[in-house]
Length: 75
Picture 1 (tube, rainbow, N blue to C red):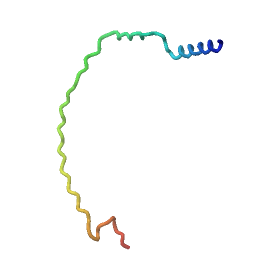
Picture 2 (tube, one colour; picture 1 turned 180 degrees about the horizontal axis):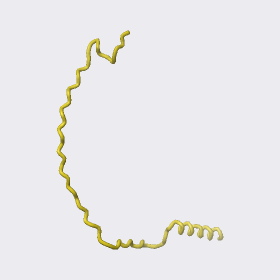
Picture 3 (cartoon, rainbow, N blue to C red; picture 1 turned 45 degrees about the horizontal axis):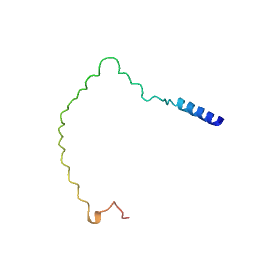
Picture 4 (cartoon, one colour; picture 1 turned 45 degrees about the vertical axis):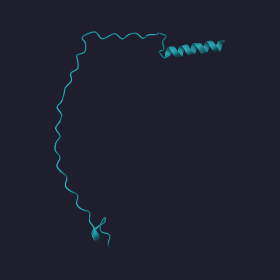
């Protein structure tokens, strides 16, 4: 009987320490006193015009024949 009483007391103490209450409804938050918030404004920006890109130069043809490779390998 005594252990049940201690367990119940510790359980209630733990629940009370965590901030748990038995209220069904929380207290309403009062609106702030003063003026209402202003209506937000929307700014419409113009569509940016794309800048033309110059055409790329063609890549040089890869070397062929005896000169092809990663570099000089002859000794």
